[in-house]
Length: 364
Ligand code: NAD
Image (cartoon, rainbow, N blue to C red; front, side, top):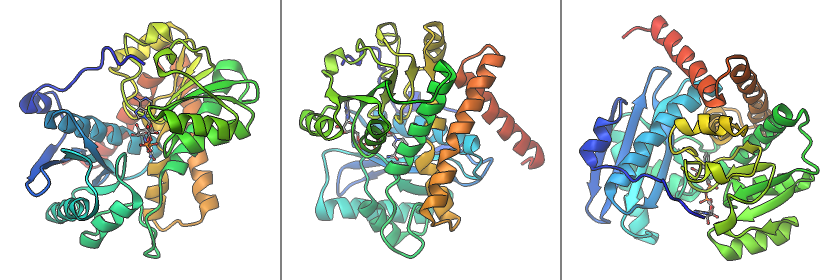
């Protein structure tokens, strides 16, 4: 698969000057050589809250850029799903994969930094971090969301995110084809990890043909066999005919290079920042491809974490609430049609309305 057109971040100052959030906390972790970035985008609805990503980046600037963009996405996500949290995200930009005592040490120092911020930011699990990692952070600081209230192991958000994407795909199919039926539909899932795997399993169980792409060829082959799907070569991914392209791996796969190649009717997946830029939403509309805004369709895990934080622990209740994303997306698709705009613009104007109203009530 070509990632042509994907932009890398400018230098530190360039990255920060392009961003209009509250601010960022930057710390170099000398023992591991990792950079810790905590990005605080907006606190209109509440304390900035979002996942902690651990990843090897080519340059620290790329990690900071990721944190800032993801924090902004969290502002829109919380507003879209009606929770009183603000937009925040953290990135542990590690120099190489960390294990054992080295990894635990970084996580503890990250937790100590959160204590210094006194609740100005709450962290949760994200790409590259695990429930075990968040338990280590939680030994040091109370500013962690997604923990089992009984003090057990933190929840894995993946299955809840997958459920949200599943119902989001149903909403998109219904809007695009007049029926949410999955039998007879084909869905290309890029990335069969924490979200993509349970998503693909549910899609296959509902009768969809599942096409699998994963950087990890062994995982792709084993997983496709498990769900009765088919592996697609990454280099031919965009040109592969399917009803739905579900990006569940990395961001910015939908960009000016890939859009002309797409042979799908719907783009609906879990990846954050699926579009390289907002202009890509119009390019998809021009090609009559329905796009489910990423920060809405992938909100299931965040929603479950927020509910757990509020004391909801019944799995049936959590799944029911996450399934409400289907209705939220259906409304966004309808609004986009009524306003002759893109679903991304419709989702964004709802968010802007919500934030505006709250700022009017609580002028600072
Ligand atoms: P993961 O790391 O568990 O799985 C990612 C999978 O994608 C892996 O199997 C990996 O091999 C594969 N992959 C990575 N790069 C690839 C590429 N270039 N081409 C094909 N396959 C590739 O991650 P996850 O938790 O499943 O998250 C997937 C995406 O969804 C991420 O963008 C993440 O930010 C987003 N997301 C996840 C959650 C969640 O609850 N985990 C919530 C919201 C958004």
